Every structure is written in C-alpha cells, then in structure tokens.
Image 1 (cartoon, rainbow, N blue to C red):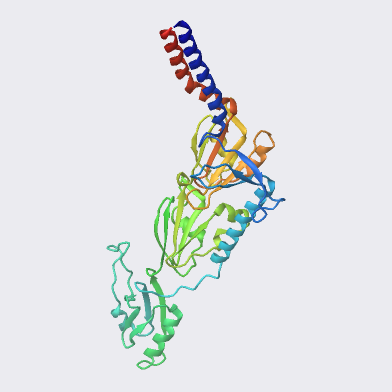
Image 2 (cartoon, rainbow, N blue to C red):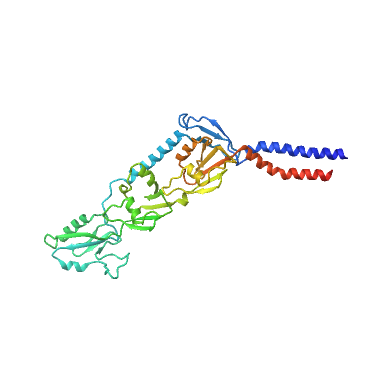
Length: 391
C-alpha cells in the first residue's frame, strides 16, 4: 500500500514539474503578452534601403500586421510626409484675401451731401447709453434678403457688393432726382460674416469679419490666445464641410507665418487640448501612464518613456519596444525599436508619436517564466500536501 502511495505521489510531483516545463516554454507566446517578430521582405510597400517589414505572429482571430523597424530612413520618410501635408494646407489658406462684401445684418452709414433731410431716414439705431453687443449702430440695416431701402432710390439689392459699388448704385439712382448727387457709403457695423473659434482658448466664440482680412494669428489673438492646456500642433479648421488639421509647430518650422494664412466667412477653428491627444505607455515600465504632449503638441517615444519613469531594468526586454498606431482607423501599424543600444535612444528622441498611440515594452523571458511559475506554485503545494496526507 505504501509503495502505491509513493508511486502516486511521485507521479503527481512529476506531472506538476512537467507542467511547469511545458507552460514555461509556452509562456513566451502567451496571447497578448509577447510579440514575436521575424524578418519579411515586402517590396511593394517598403524598400530595402528605407525599412524592414517584419511580420507579427497572430492567432486565428487576429490578422497579420506588418511591423516596421524604426531606423533613420523611416524617420526621414515620416518627417517628409508631415512637411508635405502642412505645405498643401498652407497653400489652401494662403490665397489672396477677399475684399469684404456687404451681407444681411450689416449696417451702412450713408451720407448725401447738401441734403441733410435724408439723414432723418436712418434705419434702426441705438443711443450710446442703451447699446448692447448685438444691437446695430445708427445707420441703414441690410435686410435678410440682402436689400437696402433708401429715400428716392427705393430698394436696392446690395448683398455681395463692396461699399464703393453700393455708392455707385446709389449715385445712379439718386441722379434721377438730384443734380450730381455726392454720396458717401461707409460700414457702420459688421454683423454679416463671422468666424468661430472654439476649444482650448481663453475666450472662445464668434468673431466678426471686417474690411481688414482676418488671419489665423488674428483669430487666435482675438480669442484670447492659447490656454494652458492647448495643443498648438492640433488645430482643426472646418471650411465648406471639410476638416483640415493645422499644426502651428510644423508651419513655423517650415518658415510659414500664421499671419499670412487667412480665414473666410463661416470658418470654424477649434484648438484641441493636450489631454485629448495623449498616448498610452504600458508593459514593463516603472509607471504605466497616459503621456501628455508638450505645449507645442510634440511628443516623441523618448518623451513618453520618460513620463513613464523609463523601462523597468529588472523586468523589461529592451529589445522589444513597440508602438501600435491606428487601431481604430482600420489600417493599424506597428513599429519596432531595439532599445538595447544607447544609440537607439537617438531614434526614440526623433520618433514622433501621434494621438492615441500605444507604446508597449515587452518583458524578458526570465520574468515570464517566474510569473508562470508563481501561478503553478499553489498547484504544486496542493499536490505535495495531498501526497503527504495520503501517505
């Protein structure tokens, strides 16, 4: 009987140890914990002189994703792509500013010289003591149909005209009743055209356009400037139903002045907050964190690792640093950096992250073995205890 018990105990202990060896060898490919890479050439997407295309091992439920090696050639390619995007955007915004044209709600000041009786026909007016922000100044208000009513001239359609053009039309109309009428037309209040500034600025709201073209810099200044949380590299401009992302940091780096980029009536400008553009640092780092970009909006891989307290020297595998990008866009990308050499940190310092990127630092093989072993120790102790009791 004793021999049978010893045999049973020995079998249990042997089985437990076999499970340790089996699971420890399998822990290196545990789902979600390890990203094994192997070199694959893909001539259609990456040239041999630019980057290496690496293939990640995936389960049946996840697709294969090409992993791109971070090197100097890749950094140059990404920087060139960013410059091209901002260059195209600057061309869109740097067109010649349009002259202001009158629209519904604008107030005109019209004077017919030597005929003061016509001044009594002024439209809606407010005294200085009762004027409010939305009240028109004294003058002739352009109605919602773009029309202007003036004595003797009748109703004139003035929407879309400049003040000098309106002056010519009034002079021609009044010439039927007056001899060589001298007419002066000036803007009393600009209320027809506006741009809207929202987001991380001190005084968001609507800004009225006037005869002086409003540049991007003017709009930001009149909105009180950037707040402390503003991301200066992420401004969203909505024009004619399309959105454009503007990076002031990139524009200034290219020598493009924001004072030469002009807004149009109806433009919507939103300044994103840095909290919206954070990146996630996880894995074998000292302090997993949601890293926040600088005020310029720039955050590199080195910045993100620094905010996370650097990699954990005791548990991290510095050769396995990954950046996962675009997981929600339908075209995910994965970048790999071998950080074992201090020279690799030069690449990390220049590798710019994008909002919602995920930085993952994998653990070393010994760490994974110890973690699996710690999960099996209760099972082994239970088996030993049961064997002793049975004996």
